Image 1 (tube, rainbow, N blue to C red):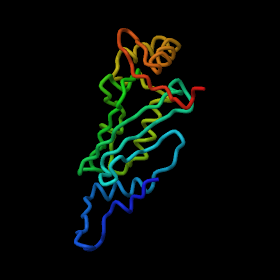
Image 2: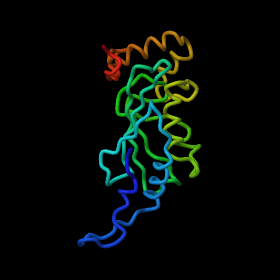
Image 3: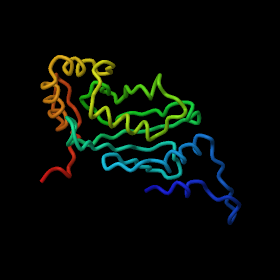
Image 4: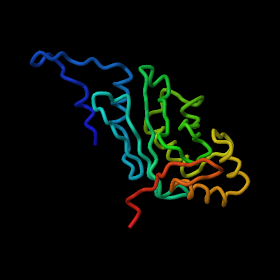
Length: 183
């Protein structure tokens, strides 16, 4: 687990180093991270421990039609957080009605339903829920949404095809298969 308190910097001047002053957004992210619930299917990753406002989230669904894939999202949090929602993008090209081919995510709490009382845990759970119950009523990928509405079984076949990096309707999707599930 990330030791968020080590990111605060020194409280005084030690050996010529000045204390780091944290912004309100950084303080709030620290609080959110300290309260994150641990999930076997979601893992936040800070590549630069000095910058807690940018990180990755890896989701590995253990049930549903997206099971067997590993999905990566990047989070960019501005200094306006928590008054402004985090910016979230999927780093892979996946077949999903609520995630377009450029990685933009359609999740209501990342847009019009964001409130400062929500936190990173809310966003993590919301993203995971998109893999359990894709929403064809509010799509970014209209083609995938149409298939989901018209033929759920075909949609599930398309998801399984896309996870392995194959083509659907002329679009090649990224291979997101979880290598730990292969023998």
